[in-house]
Image 1 (cartoon, one colour):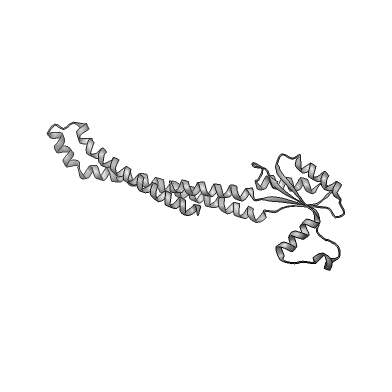
Image 2: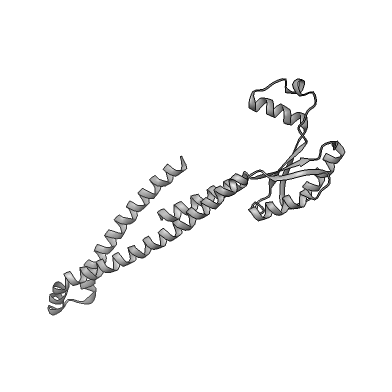
Amino acid sequence: ALFLLIAFNLHRGLDSIRSQREVQVFLAPGTGETAWTRVGDLLGQRIEIAEAELVTPEQGLAEFERDYGESGLLDALGDNPLPAVYRVTMAEGYRTPEEISSLVDKLDRNPAVESAQDGGRGIAKVEARVRTCAALNLIVGLLTGLSAILIVANTIRLTIRARSELVAILKLIGARDSFVRGPFRLEGSMQGIIAGVGALLVLRGVHELVSM
């Protein structure tokens, strides 16, 4: 159960990372609002795009001044050097690196677009590491499960051997099979219940710790 919890959180984290990926479409210098609208309509027609937000050169300059604490840049530069940009959010199901790369290639062919860039190239590396962690988690989980099965099987075998004389005596005095099996079943059930409750408590604690 612990490995299932880890796998669930890894996949949920991967989905969260993918949802933050966006494509930045830089429009060619000299294009006006008509070209911006045309490109925006084109982006809105594509099924792999969930949202396309236009950032005008003025808005981009204002964001730069706000984020970096610089003011009066336009006075120093004379002209605003920033291009108009569309921040494109990919639709669910189209957030894989292959889908994003395909969209970037298509947008680069548009004459009104200077360049289209995957704004989440660093996120792609994180995705690869998360996939690696998920694969390792699966392998370790399978090995741990196999080890647990072997340990339980050997424990049962040793328990039966340790009590073989008692079983033989009960058989000699006429005890039925159900009477002989009863204590073993009761002991196994109690151990299973205690182990299950303990595992659930540990799992709950780990889940709350990971969710913090």
